[in-house]
Image 1 (cartoon, rainbow, N blue to C red):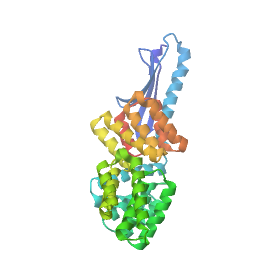
Image 2: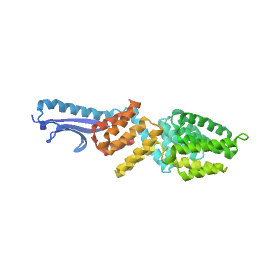
Image 3: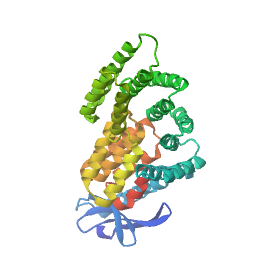
Image 4: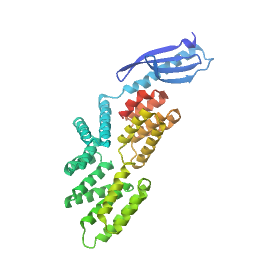
Length: 378
């Protein structure tokens, strides 16, 4: 029997679609395993076979490679119904965030409320709804959603900071006491995070503007505010408009506390555009841009953003997303991609997204168009 006649074929169902896996040795003595749909080859694995290898030695080896490839592909079907629902909720969260980013607030609110009907403890939906109600001026409702988000994810800083912002908007003696309490907790848990000090500055400036302090306490509040501003700027100087920061510093020293407050709020809002977006916004928008333009620079910019987020909050989801972006960059980045999936699995060995993606890397070459929609659900 000639090696060229070694040809294994097996059907496989992936996400309710039938494909065929074919493993054979081609005329150049390459052992190939291919994933096919009709006549189209969606992906393949390839290795060289020594031309002097005897048929009886290679037959079992080819069969083993065939079975191994089938097994790797079958892991794509390991998501339970519960995991599939999580993927669909991720996609809904993404759609809501896109509507929000585009200024379609009513549409975004409708989607996030729909998510909460299906999963009442979605931190992303609660956080967005809190922000939306804050934009609408309904601060009590915003506080209700943000408190829920903060309770469900006590280690996630954004809902806490949003909650501080909502209490500041209420601007009552009771809400200011709650701001102080929240900020003390944030300072304890995130002493090296620049937003901690921007919001401490906001709190002090609000007190100074309202003359909400004890007799002769104002000089200490001003001194602490300047200290917080310096600390915040030193931690995030690469992301801050230096001119606005300097104006803020001058306004504080000049006693123009309301103007200084507005400047700090401006710094916070504009800094978020480069650093404090939620990762779901950046990741899915990056994928959609890449799907349209196929420009690798889009992927590299996405990786840079996520590496900045890792410095603030390293977690399995970020490692998984960085791994995906490196995977899309091509063959030379597969080792880096695999390293990031492994880091995600070190944090949670049962993290199914990272498991499936790790197997994709081991397959080495896969059709990108075939995978992009699945990546959008992560």
